Image 1 (cartoon, rainbow, N blue to C red):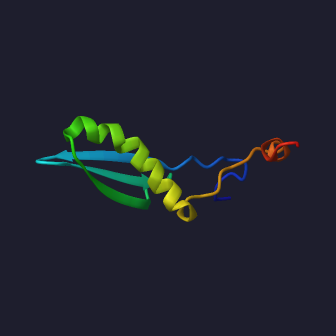
Image 2: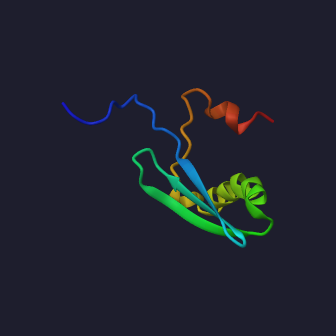
Length: 89
């Protein structure tokens, strides 16, 4: 018998950040799935040096995820929480 356990949960995608500093800094963000496949990669030039680049890196990663949401797997909602997440009004 092979394959994944049907009850096994998938891991959320992760990202890595690389900051290159020369005359200006470049933030490089690469989102990968649990198998290491690249989902999306982006680069952004940042004025103000490495400290400023580190400051914007997380926001840039989140922007990439939002802008390319169709490339990311849908969030896993545990059974029974669907109604709670929709909200009762």
